[in-house]
Image 1 (cartoon, rainbow, N blue to C red):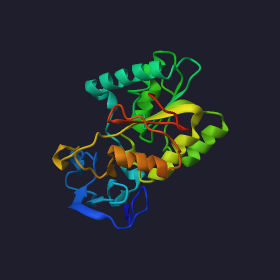
Image 2: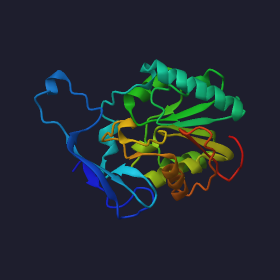
Image 3: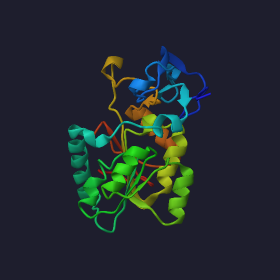
Length: 262
């Protein structure tokens, strides 16, 4: 079995989930077929979208093995998008200024892909650590001089990093929460690798009022993480943080409640 069904909300554990729409069985996202595979049977998984009335989280009910989704010939390289590169550079410049980052700081990015984001810190002599399970993008990042671990980010890795005093001033997760099956464990891991005065910068889709305006629902996307749901997810992960929502697509999470701008 390449997937398993969930019976309760991935964030709050509520069991009475409301079905929004069922897409039936669909091929896995990012599984681009080569010419010699066109006549072979393709992996398909049920795709059911549900809503949690307790915490507002919209999510899919099937969990496909992450090794299948992200480790086998993963085709997406973030640096191919000039728009994303420009967006990332602007965000990095803002973080360097607002968080007063320098050569004594550390920036960790989870799902760092080919280094599209972290390169902006490296260019400013700010130490970085990328974490990404996809071999192709992780290899490209290393070749670009970006220190990258090719593995999944979880509490086991976070514990190892913390025990070796690898703690971050900033932990970045750009549109990552929607791809994580163990949401609460992932959030807990972020808290484990943050310095006491550090901050997690979590980019999520902005709140959508109509389904047609949202990004496509993919087999790798567990939820449409609107701001209210994200706050509850972080709280459920026991990070114990405050939120600054000056920008609708970002949540700034801290190890302890601090008022004001990030």
